[in-house]
Length: 163
Image (tube, rainbow, N blue to C red; front, side, top):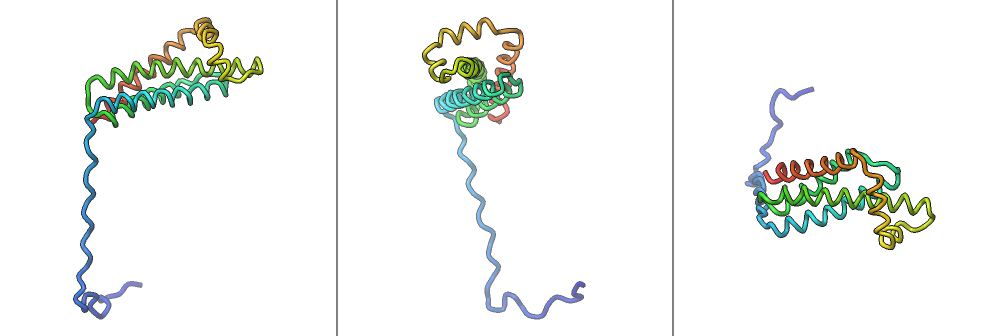
């Protein structure tokens, strides 16, 4: 049921005025620090490589969408921290290729550690040459597709985040 007339009484009778809206927060400062962008991209690449390798080792397969995520994360972190520098998308693409490669090596170490009943860290650090040989023997066209997809995603993510 609606009221045909407003309720009686003045809500501002005591002289109280309505509270003004709070001021809008200041905009976030524009980041134009290429060094910070490079550090953010490197940290993101290392973290993403660990996650990518852990996922690949756990399911004993590689997932293309995970490579896209690695690339996008590296590019996004670089651009958000470093700003709109032309070099950041290119550096992000290179770092994402390295991150996917490192993730593949971590995945190989996890799988090899499971099969040999050895810790994955020992496989990775103690037998790094063996890991790279296993990667070289197991690489195929899809391996390079994952590397390329990560690079493209990093480049696109950096360009998109810098806007």
